[in-house]
Image (cartoon, rainbow, N blue to C red):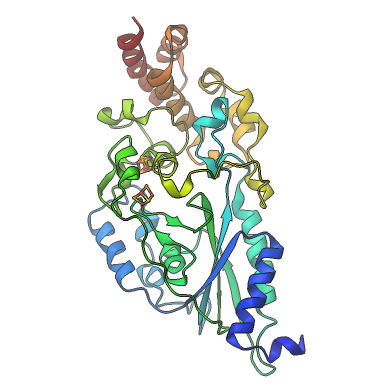
Length: 359
Ligand code: SF4
Ligand code: SF4
């Protein structure tokens, strides 16, 4: 063990972990006390009580872990949550790429981020005093942890009215990841919320999915509908899905904290670089492709989640919302012959909307 490390103070540790995180390719890092969440958890509990998690039943699992009071199964005696942010593309994109949420245009990021968090955790484990056995574990997405709440507590960013963590200088187009550790590290201070009187994200939401600032009803959110929801969309929302085949960034692109983020500066995390395949595809390709052909495109990417059927359904609706007269034939064919009933149904309704617009 590094002798300088064993004598390190909580401040030294914070500095060294910060340096290592930047070396590993994280864009921002901050430290929170690993103590139970209070106000943040009350908000989450209210969200569950309203049933707003829809079919995402996993969000109601393990409430004690989400509240941060039960690290026993994860990291017994945890003192610190190290919060990291990794920048995603902010570019508009082309072709089908522009219809996919920015975080999802590359390869599945979970493995890559998990690997980096594990490396950071291993580094953290070298920083204890000589007689101190430090435990540290990395988490990304999968663990039942209110990661935005810890990010806010750490001062990594503040939670905007769109419910997302806004990191100063980076905006909200970032992925969060954590290392939970028994090591004591100087914790950060929560930032002031900086939205002020702005309501751009709420106004930009195509389905009016916000009941109030910070209060999202995911059942009306395009991201939930196009990724998690199975079966037909609620009829009143089909037209409002707009041009979103997978996910939605509208409440982020409207946010002034994301303005000017679309730079050519290379992403530090290569798995988040948009795949060229999306630029070469059209909505018609997604609608016509067999399940096997679609799998070739989506395997190893976040777009696997809705499955071939869900993606083709989404493509049909987007064609109905944004297509032109030349798409009528394609939709008409899909409405009669597509192998999935939900896609035939989506194409039939999309065809009605398209006809009403272009004929
Ligand atoms: S992701 Fe889209 S649909 Fe969901 S809340 Fe944001 S703007 Fe609304
Ligand atoms: S758009 Fe405005 S209100 Fe919404 S998160 Fe950004 S700054 Fe806050």
